[in-house]
Length: 141
Image (cartoon, rainbow, N blue to C red; front, side, top):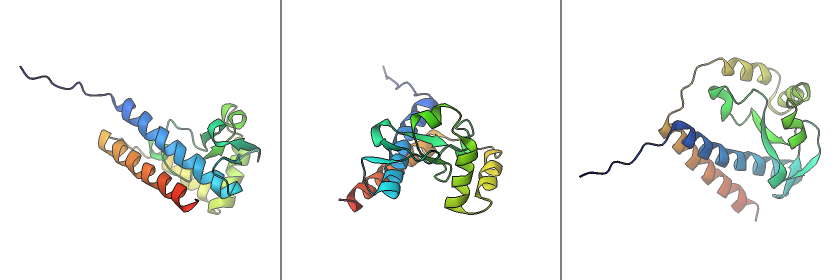
C-alpha cells in the first residue's frame, strides 16, 4: 500500500512566501530609513516603529496577484496607517518620490494584469527573499 502525501493548498505557499517577503521588506526599509535593523520609519506618516511591530503595507491592495509581491508596491508601515486604508494619498506621493513620476500609474496598470501564482512560483520567491534577507543582515553587521 502506497501512502500519498496530501497536497497542500496554494494559500499555504502564498502565506509562507508572504511571511518571508514581509520580513525582507520590513528589514530593507528599516535599514534604508534609519540605518538600524531594529526600527524604521512608516512610509506614510514617518513614525518610528520597531520591526516586529511594523507591517509590510501595500500601495495597491494585496488582492491583486500581479502586485502582491512587487517590491515597489510594498513598504514598511505602522499598524495604524496600514490598518486604516494605508493613507493612500501620502503613499502615492512617496511612491513617486522613491521611484519617479509615473511609478504610481505603472503599479495601478500592473494590478490589472492577470497573474496566476503557482506553488513553484511561490516556493521560488520564498527562497529568493530568504537569501535576500540574509544578505541584508550580513551586509549590515
